Image (cartoon, rainbow, N blue to C red; front, side, top):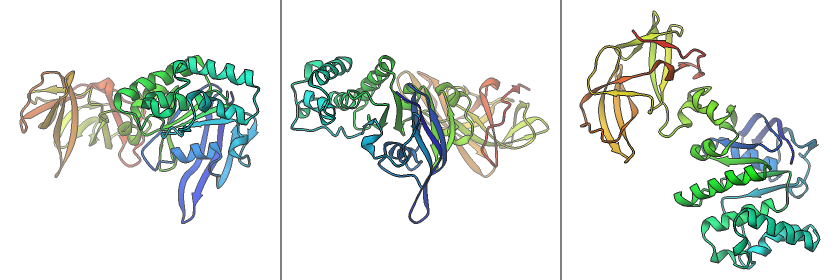
Length: 362
């Protein structure tokens, strides 16, 4: 295992497209780090640069104490798992697992030991005689992970490995990955656009947008202390509600309503509240945000209520996580409470989080 480090790495393509801009990131030895963000944010570019499948325009990439910018992929001692399993269809599971070791002239006894050990760890030891076409999607993905792990690489790179699986298999293999990393803590960099995968798998997350890092932190830090409106809206399902507002004389005004006293400086703000923290009231009274129901989505364990808030001449759509059985008709007025300890304030111009989230009810 080894530490992985990006030092001021930029990747610029012909035509001026910048896929990665001044990228600085350190992945600790044995850490499971997630690169997460929307399509085109630069996360896969970072992984390809680390793997040696692409070269940086500037900057330095290290694996352990070695600068790897000029090294070929096969000389970097890394292993990759892709979203397509890339298994050899004519080979058995055993031969797929053993292939990389045999190419490196590993002694036969050592190949046998490592293959059996890895297959047992991944619970595919009873499938070694089968070919990929005889396996389920989840089993094939385990074989792909096993083929990478059996080499005992310095770093393990995973590029959206679960995206081809159905929802049930994704949950199963996600659990396999978490257990596997606990038992065999190889330095791992995992790319995904799925924030649920990111939150459940990573020791730390690196949230990206536009080729730049927006925030690095633990899942708890990212979710509960987002650095800006992009992170706040991206990490969460449904996403955080973001509403244009203004603080005047220490009072938060949303649209035409004075909602509550706040301890943040006066001026325009973006106020954020997660759907599970908004409190839904069937009538509007002072201190609540006035809104009206747009539509309701019963989801069994809970109900998502989408409501409209008037902000000047425009309407802002907000989502409320309500208890199961909540029954509201479209168009009826409601009031929304924003708990002081779970309301966020962001600068209206930069989108960056304001430090204070304290509020005092009127």
